[in-house]
Amino acid sequence: MEDLKFRLLVVRSIKRHVPFQSEESSLETVNSSSSYGIKKEEVTSYEEDREKEKNYRGVRKRPWGKFAAEIRDSTRNVVRVWLGTFDNAEEAALAYDQDAFAMRGSMAILNFPVEIVKESFKLNEV
Image (cartoon, rainbow, N blue to C red; front, side, top):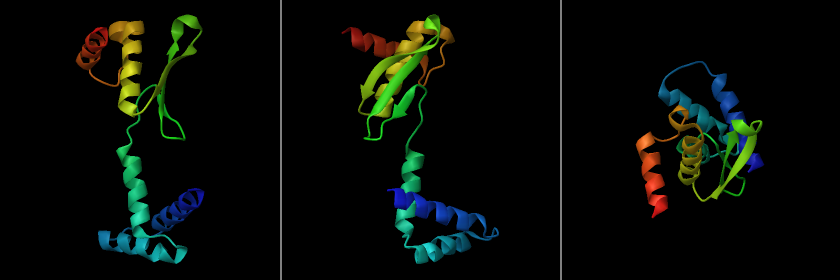
């Protein structure tokens, strides 16, 4: 994985130093990087994965693929409050939203609309 990241950095630096031309020329730049042992598929799949991942407030991705949620509590000297570990980022973000809404009410900055957070409270009560 480290080797792939290094090779992607090489490709990006090559693309930066090529003057702007048409899309075809930028594809040639990626293809010309095959002398470094990089396949075009490797570059696109890595970049697509990065674009697919959405960053949520209060959520971190663990190296092994799980998502951790935590929130800072301003009433206790801004200490971190652990909310749990989740299988996907949306579950972790919803846990953050529920706790943020419970702590700060309408002043909370949320990941999802307020209606979804309130509905999730109702689902948890059942």
